[in-house]
Image (cartoon, rainbow, N blue to C red; front, side, top):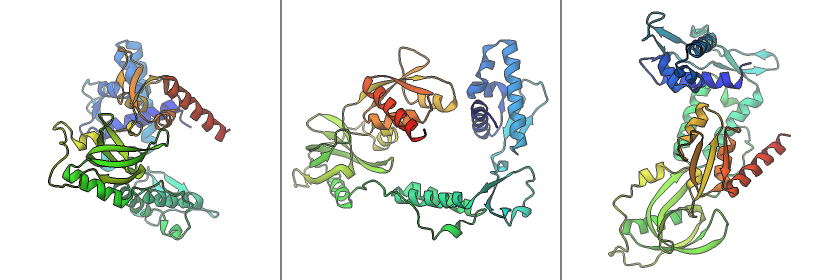
Length: 360
């Protein structure tokens, strides 16, 4: 079985090779694959050792059927490596029954003899169907379309119709936005009218009256949000629509606008840059995170923050939802640890302890 470090190198290597149609030199790989970055040191012994690691990784991936091509003559500086996306196939999928493995009926048609067959037992097949049903219930049109596309592709190999009538064990989705609320907010936005509403905060779950100037409605992380200026706080905030009650225009004279949306506000950019922990209407806290390894996932996470005092391992994040931020860090398995403030550190430790208790 491959070690975690080796598997991470394989994944990072494939990501780089599949993203470059013309291929990549070893120097390109050393810059973009964290596991080969030591080759940039210039030390001859280190460079040769890293190259040998790369050659072993390349040989292992070829054994799994990954078509890695070598372009150029061995030893040339411009020798490149390439994986053609059109030739990179997933293993065949099949269902295992008590009588043993069953090959897909069409397996003999295609002559990909180097490909392995990935087996599923019936319970795993049911889990796929349940997961698809759960994803559809979240109400995100884009996600639903992706689920349907994925299920059509899987159905090419797997008899998913056999579990279509099974009763999924599904946890009900979180509260959805009220269509009437969306309609009223949309009308106020269209006519640039201030809105008075009651809002239940995500942080304290306390309900209070707010007067806001709507800037736009956007969908993120399975929820509708209202981007609006909070008149009392004189600040731009994001309000989850499912937590808004009794929205009403302060002034019903639709011919006269109550406010103007700033010229530099672009809803598409505002929605695109929102991370789950940034969503909310409370004041943001400054959270500092230490990056403890250089895997591709941790490095990508670090790029979402800003450097702290030019430190190569510290990143700063603006956090409104501490619980969501702690859950996100938890996914890196100790590779990204919060160091301040205490509210973020304590929540992270609480979630680590709770997760460890579940799997004890």
